Image (cartoon, rainbow, N blue to C red; front, side, top):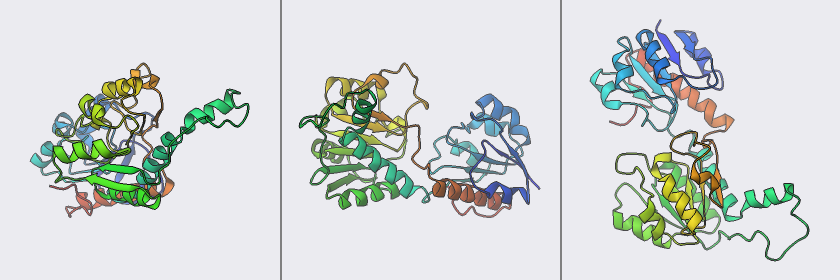
Length: 309
């Protein structure tokens, strides 16, 4: 029986299954453990289920001499020092595929909401500003025949592309083989830009001042990937200066975004609290996969969903 630490309570019954064969210690608080909290618990950890909010760095791994398996409750794994884990031969798992539709649905919901200026229209009703039907009130843009540019054509990017095609949009994209010129061409012609690239040193602040200035002034930016893909200061300036028409973010850097950040004063902007995978189906299935990864890793078997080498 191994001692397993889970950094937050997970939906569904997957942790009950883990508890049948291992000792389970679940962080009891609503907010995640701090890095200091994690390091303090590290010496007793043999198995770990972490969340994207948890920095599983070299220091933590060094202080966890018994650690034999790490299972990340997320598709991404940029919160884990993979080199430090590999040096200790600790397998690392993640939860791909299951949140594809949930995240694609949210990306498209955000796209529609900004395109049709829904937050502004809803606020007008509550403020008593809806006095009559007006021919020029809350004018948005239509999706049919518009160009949707997808940056990163992985599973989620492909799912968003299918949704765009269903709305009669022209879909263009970049992928891992695309060049800087390919991205520039996409940005110049896209009416909507949806980000689905992984966060790496090469993609951090991929959307910066130069890129935003290259976009159409009528363009709308959607980010359901990683907050670090976008330079938030540059985005705030672009929205306030009219370089682009609107944006919607489900991810920020940091999370949560500080309440005094200039981005929160920008016009035609939606920010949601990282809810891309927030459906009952997706989150419970993620828990099942996370537990499967941990069980197999602790048993010395290949994880069914190990992170790519």
